[in-house]
Image 1 (cartoon, rainbow, N blue to C red):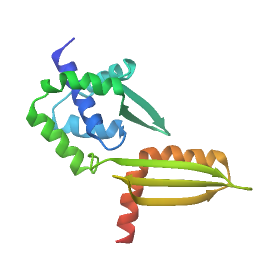
Image 2: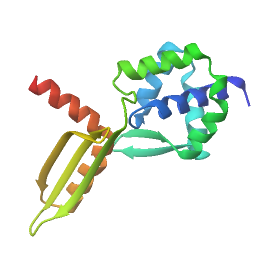
Image 3: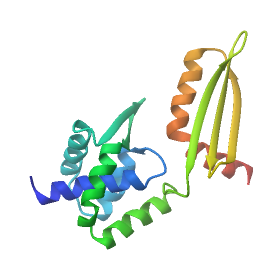
Length: 169
């Protein structure tokens, strides 16, 4: 296996480990391809191999793919993280911070569905260090709609929060 391929895998694992949320293919590719002079096809091969070996999970929403690191991926990274140069790790963390994707504390996004007599109540919440920073409750007509909202909340809660702040300030 080429050293570059291993490095690409470590970069992806490092980004996912230090991200506050799942990352889309474009979020991973955007910085890595522009700033680190990595070949697109080699990066995609590394992502595919990480998925196939269970080090990262792929979840598809509509036409977008989102990735999260698994516990096995975190464990693997812990053994090899020292092989990533400190300057590269700093650049990757800076990118996550600039994009609002960094781990700012312990952020937890949750969602629940509560069945009412004729509809469903969806309860979405973001907590940072056990403090509620956003709570949304909405009534929807079908369980399918409620499930879709909950599923999307897991990936888009930060975007919803940012949009609300933008609109309200």
